[in-house]
Length: 176
Image 1 (cartoon, rainbow, N blue to C red):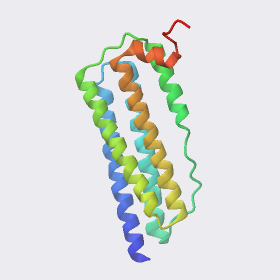
Image 2: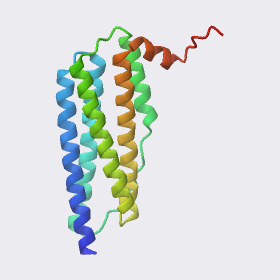
Image 3: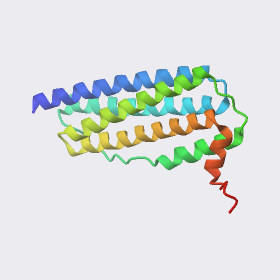
Image 4: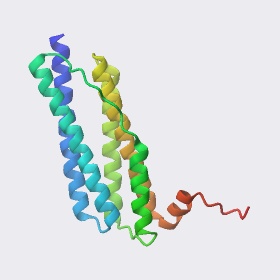
C-alpha cells in the first residue's frame, strides 16, 4: 500500500504542476488579449486552475500527514454556469469582435492543454485506489472538459461572431 501511496502523491504533484502552468498560461493570455470577453474568460480560467491547485495541495498535505486518502465531499460543478456567463458576456460585446491569429493560436494551445489535462484526470480516475480519489479525478476531468468546450465556443465566436450569434439564438435560415 505504501507503493500505491507514493504513486498517488506523485500523480498529485504532477497535477499541481499542471494547474500552476495552466494558471500562468491563462494569466498571460488575459494580459495579451485585445478584447474584454477574452480578458475576462482567461482570468476566469486562471482562477479555476488555481482552485484545482489548492484542492490538490490540500489533499496532498492530508495524505502526507494521515497516510490515507481524505474523505471528501466532491461535487462536480455544472458546466452550464460557465456557458451561460460566457454567452452573456459575448452577447454584451456583440458581433464586432476582431480575432488575431495570435489569439486563435493561444486558444488552440489552451484547448490542447485542457484536453491533455482531462485525459490525465480520466486515466488517474480509472487507476484510483480509493473511492474519494476516483470521485475527485472524475469530477476534475468533467470540469476540464467543460473548459475545453468553452474554449471551442469562444474560438467559434472569434472566427465568425455573426455565425456564433445565429447558432446561439437558434435562428433558422430556411425561411420556415
